[in-house]
Length: 256
Image (cartoon, rainbow, N blue to C red):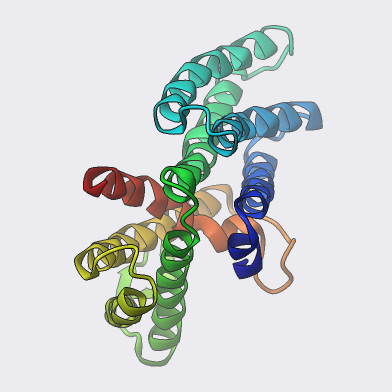
């Protein structure tokens, strides 16, 4: 992960493009049960915005303006592509399939596209991407370790029988402490900016983890995939990071 981020902007785009593609495939694999062709089409359309914005950003074609305009203009034809496909698919539940395909774009495709904006909008900014990942890793890891040892009060037992308030608060404390190191080592952002991003990670990273737990519970499945033995799929590992990205992007747009 760190090598892909720091080697160059091209390895960054390739790394997260592969991650986004596999997350989309896992998502559609567990939700779209009717045929491999539909899952392939949905996955390719889900990654389309990422690819188009990457081309604009890496070729410096008026990147700041064109990326968001292209994102909006591209999203509308993508939606109607699903309608056209289902018109000829003879499926018994076409609108369920359309809604699921669109959800994958919003839930996974667009957040990873926003990550490109975070990294590539004003020259390549690997430290900001790395800082967000570190905050997310610290929050997840500290919450798990403290929750497994001292956790007693369940955070949301209807969705997650293991996540506790004690773990969540412990993870939050360690995440906020980490901002001190990030401010020193990654001065591209001010101390207050890293603190705000840490709060975003704490709140929305935790909610993202719960959202994916809700998804798996509703489908009665333990993991999104089996790519990572003992850990499940890539979507299981990036569920909180995906949820962070829209809110982190909104804040970074504001301060820029």
